[in-house]
Image (cartoon, rainbow, N blue to C red; front, side, top):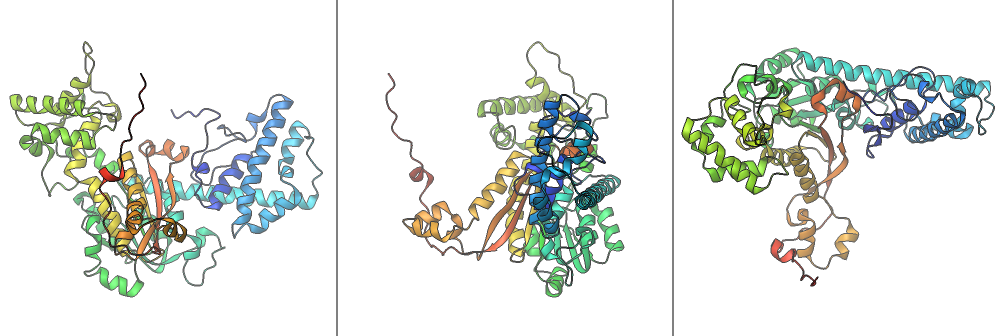
Length: 543
């Protein structure tokens, strides 16, 4: 079902901001195709020297010219991987030794099978022993990482949800230098535990929370937020199971206020400000599969009909059917244009709003998600074609229209921005914030937040002409905040292996940010309006 062309790039391995150990493991496992099949650091997939999915070195069979090219490509990848390994603390000795003896010697078994290449040199028994130990260590580490990732996914499935980009988030949330007191940053990451207070802003079914707890020491604590009543059984069970866990029944947009009240004020006094905050934005698999919410459009032609609610918390706010019953054409058109398809223009939004409100006037309120989806689907079907509900909800023409109403009712985009501001207000200086999103609009909000909170370097501040211009280019300068936000990594996409295990992860993106001290001066001036800062120049005549 999931087929990859031989030359498709390894997505996660090519992310420029990944930790060196992760990049090295993925590159080295891709190049070192001899011996046992190599897996890409737990998140990746089984690859050959040139990136095709296979086992062993079968993809390298062919003409002698192809063999030489594959060997040269493999040696280049392996050299890059080992160079990164050499820069890491744990593998500095291995990387330095690899550079001393020559990278091509790692392909000795390939030479034995296909014949020596011109660049091949004699491998001593001492070097061969080193080769074997390195390969065995790399194989054990990558297999262990993959097993941890698989166990986390299986645990999530039992809870009704598979967390996306879980293991990369843990690597960024728990850097080696932040380990518990008395631990060596160079020791095996699997054996390292962490002190301090951490926050899971979106508990969901507890996938992230359980993985975080597995990495905390006895002096570590975790606080989780969620407003969905359906997560209460899992959260209450985890509270009883682990005394290090505290659950707050509230939206993450109220995080700063919650940290001014008990029991969080006591936790801050004992363990300090949070060292890390993690967000998994969007609806969970369990919420999609709960047909009573109306989130899923899957198999509407055969399944039972369900109400059109679309609320994250059914006890708060107004359902989608009730809101539509009192909405005007202009209001609905604004929602569809603002939160719907990015490629949809205002005319399409207005026409769709007119069709929906007209049908509601003639046939009554939309109490059924099937009726609403069928109306939108017929309106988007080409003339002369018969409309049928597709089996997959992702292929339903009404998906983005339903999503637009859901995003508006739950204020999801606004809550994301508010949640980022709240998270950095409670984070400790140097603390990290990891956010996983699934929509381009959500990714745009994160990028805009980082841009507005970026701290200019002293050279830029000195070069700018006025304080007003400083505020226009770097809005942080016009605030009273004493911290800035630094983007460490992102956006990071899921690996092919994770997408094959969880199809809903294919659109996920992850951003890693850090709270840093502010350096730029305070400027109490207002920026010019956009009409003054962006001026359309006079056009030159073409005729």
